[in-house]
Image (tube, rainbow, N blue to C red; front, side, top):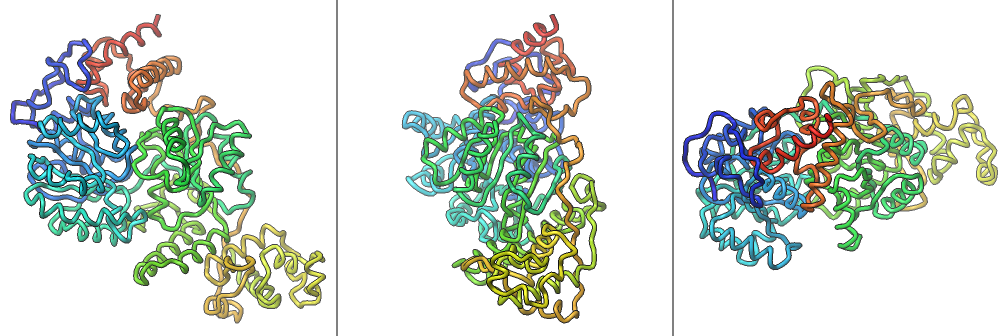
Length: 639
């Protein structure tokens, strides 16, 4: 049940270290239900000394009964914006979430904090589902997580209308928008909540929504008077790098060699590619698993369990492995194929570094990716208005890959945000690229494509330009063309870069439905050939090892600590203790304590429960549950 009125304590209490019963705060910790002050709940229950950014404003607005749309980057603390009001308002808070794994992680984390939380979804065994339903009816739940499908079916909605409801939270709210990159039609049906719960505040939350998507969320959910809380989307702990594909596997292995022992995600465009890539990585000694929609349910569960277990695993996946990934210590996200929008790209790279520690993102892209994405969009059955928006987003994504400016600046402009200066933590800031007037080179490529009848691929066009008498060149008599050999002054990789950039500019395209031949796109190509339009190109250089940054992992897979003077042996002892606790409870380690909490403990070496209770992230329930055990690890390591 929700929190009732009562006097809030002003300091963290001393706590009897006797372990409480499952998911219940110890009596002398002061039950949650005796407090109403959100700041005190933040401190006592979640262990945080103060709110961050817009959290407090959002919490107070919902507490007052107002609707809200909260936009905060991944790791920005969105969940507290509904969890704390849920504990302050009478009744049960309903949290609508699209993924079972996300629900399970959040319920496990809340229970660790001593909060009565449950979930209803298709993978619950019947006994547990009955227990959750009983607790809901009896008013024993502070928060109930449910999918939109479950909410709107099987009498769930009717049952809830007869119960006191504290608030309704719609998580991953971009799913409601037809303009969003992960649109789910069932989310549009949530507009009926305003009618069924007319006096219940609703709060929609997402980490990814451009201005058009924000407007559509409010319209689709029938929340015209909702207050929008828009935080900065800037993630200073993410280092963003993009490279053209030259040798995809070699580039990937080079990147991963600097992250041995770390957890990361590698995104691929197809199911088959995820399986090929994972197999190659396993052959090279990496712990890699596959995740895509075509796997059997048991295989998906096994891969997800390995990822959630805290194991240093590389998840090679399609976008089916997506929203709501709660693991905080994902140190890198790699894209082997270009996403189709900046919104999708930002959402996916946001799964790295949720703990705030430095992390890397690495995008590989090529002309084939660009042409394939344009072709798929052209073949889409979406309405023309929607295709127009999708096309604009795709072209923005293409320009993001080829930009010579700060990538973070360009990415954030897609969300209506302008950085006052370059970010300093992307590849273009670290090593500004060189540009040149490539008009002549562009004309040579376009002329070669035109004179070879616009049916040949890049390899053949480059061979003609370089004057290479290959068998196909001689067979088609292309050695007799006036363009034969006019590009001999540049190596093949240079010309591949020019072709890729001309595809990005829209002057060239690839016949993806045929044999992959290059052809001219008339309107953009004609003024270039006539010399009426100047073409500035980026000078591709051979992929260079990334500079040593704060994002580089050590051989044990951990990022260098953000806290000074953390004894490595003590930190590892605490991690080993946490892993054992997680195994015994069959929960992810990070719902017990994040690495950042363990580092703070190792750095400060608290000597008693009162000192341990002052560590950020150590709430009353966790202090009672784990306090003496943590102190024992500290004492043993010191001896």
